[in-house]
Every structure is written in C-alpha cells, then in structure tokens.
Image 1 (cartoon, rainbow, N blue to C red):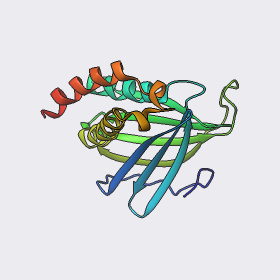
Image 2 (tube, rainbow, N blue to C red; image 1 turned 90 degrees about the horizontal axis):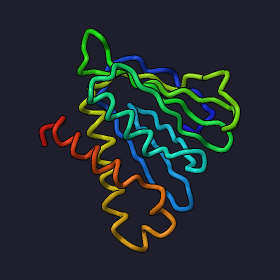
Image 3 (spheres, rainbow, N blue to C red; image 1 turned 90 degrees about the vertical axis):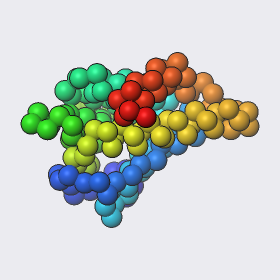
Length: 171
C-alpha cells in the first residue's frame, strides 16, 4: 500500500506485525509497516526535523511512564502523525494510530486521515523499533554506508535509549 491509499483500520490486538526503518542517503528514510496482509510504505524526510530523535523520545517517554505520545514524520509535502497511547486498563499494551496529512511543513496540519490503528504489547513495539535503530547504528560503522547518512542518526540519543531498552526488556 502506497502513501495516499487509505487502509481499513485494524483495531484489534495483533502480533502479526513487523516493521522496517531504513536510513537512506541524502536526508531520507523509509518506514515500512507489515501488518497482517497489508504493507504500508511511508517516506520520511530529515529536512524538517530529526525523525529518529522524535521516535526515540516518544518510545523513551512510554517506557518512563507517559500515557500518550505523538510525533510527526514529514514527507514533501505532507506527512504522518504517529500516536502511541497506553491502554489504561492494560498498560502493557498500546494503541498505535498512524494518520496522514497533506499540508506542507510550514503549515499546521488541519485535517488528518487515519491510515491504520492497531493494538499490540508495548514490549513488542519497543523491540521492533530498537532492533531497527540498532541495525542502523551498526551499519553506520561502515564508512561506505555512513557516507551521506552519518549526520541523520542521533548517536547520543540512541545510546541513552539502548540503555533504557536493555533495562526495560531485561536483556
């Protein structure tokens, strides 16, 4: 499924889910969500912010007890709002909502279109994202891979997040 196509919202618990977060050269990343029989591709530009830091901050806040967090991943134009909310009666689970907007970076999004919403365990979500970030961190040790990518990865924030995740997941 490409950006712009609306997926029927899946509002149920699932563990039939995986994701891919790829740091591409020259200020772009790609996020791919595989959920049940659907695939959602989201391009992310690094021009308007630091999408990896935003992700790390949101996940860290959830680990540290925050009930609801959100962040934006911009494209050109438009982008996506990602909301992560703990379920009050089962705080080991979260509802993940991904909505799309069409406005450019300098304009406040006025209308969001829900692309997908699902529920899963917080430790599942943390594990999936941590492993993608760790993969990128390891790949950036290679000078050829790091060329045109090095400035787009938040090394200090990742190391702090990694320590938090190791404790949270009891690795």
